[in-house]
Image (cartoon, rainbow, N blue to C red; front, side, top):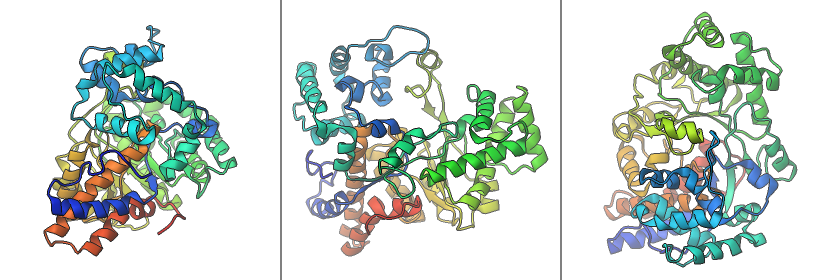
Length: 477
């Protein structure tokens, strides 16, 4: 999808570099979108129903927006965020939208404002600037668009130029929505919407209802999870089901990047303690760390790319969690150590080209000191793009500056939008492509890279690299 919102947005201010960046950006903008990691509900596309009102589409599910208002004393329930404790929730979409617009000034200079403004303009064609005074006018214009067939999910998917969209599901998911997509020609192996294997809820002993989840894993897999060996067999069986549904990767959202290679008896003893409810925090961390080695071994057998997303302290805002549950903006980053934490995994499999591990971080300080040297020294490693709290133009620029001199471009894995907000996918990829165009234009202007190589590189970053790293077949070259 070609964008219209401020054509020189985020491009260099220096005229010569800007001219080069425009040419490079045009090449990137023409590429299809590969979205290899995100959290869009596959039911959105499987059912292809009209979106709800503007507030429920753009405000209620977006914790980037609701957490900012929470920081200024506006409870998420007043913005329509569902509660788990029975507290009342605002249900009037127009009231929610007006309340959000009344606090629009809080987002000055933030990527959230950038993404939403681009979404309004480029996706919905709404050019009226949002403000308290224009809230109703913008709401009405959006509501009118949402009633049109051209703004249903599948129509937008096509207009956005998405070649592959990966969603994220638990091993306990029956993958029925993906089966519906595949039956409609929208999913399955080689399809346009694929799943990703995310086993945190059956691996992390500190996850709510972990043991009950492992019981459920037995039911959906047909394996006996009463023993550690049976548990591993159940995970392998579910991975096979995910691969049959089109998955090319697994994803692991651990608190740390620690890995640990236990012998089978030690691992079984840890597992048994957890199942009896006797595992402590150290046991839970050791089991998570060991399971990363187990999953690496499984990947050598079945080919799934491993994604590791460490560093989030989940549910740090305990009151928010008690009222609204998970994934509503209550998480914060923490310092993360990779060099020693990943050593057991890298000692075992880091030089094996059959394994692909994509590393992410919420700790920007590790870009130069740890991540780039690691990715530049092991065949299995690629660096994932800045995500979540780091998904901003400034950090995207600093990422390229920090990692390119050690890891180059080709030990990185392309941009991931990591979003639940379907309509923000094209604008987030557009921001990353603009930042990369500016970075490459600077290299050309400084005579560090020929222009033809910069042109090839930006297409690689936008399209070819993520397609290759995440093992998506087909497409154009």
